[in-house]
Length: 125
Image (cartoon, rainbow, N blue to C red; front, side, top):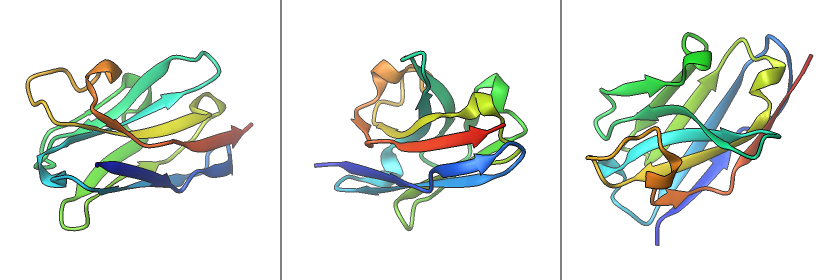
């Protein structure tokens, strides 16, 4: 059974930074496309960033480009999200997700096979 466990969320002031981590166990991590999604008060799970199995192909949602950086370490079965210049609009529960199918869009939450339980990020203005 594949398990994803997020950590690193918390409360930060606007303009600050946080680093989220996701530890993956129970599967072949190096074959998964990995992503971060977030869900704010609107109850919609929004795509944030994704990284290919090799780490070479990365995509971001437009509002986080230049502020967030996704990375993965296949030796440690982990993926991270470095978040800088945070604003109140970044407040949400952040979820780590794993996708085994290379032929579907990594931006669609419905395509993901495995999810973590989420970690709360709150940015105070």
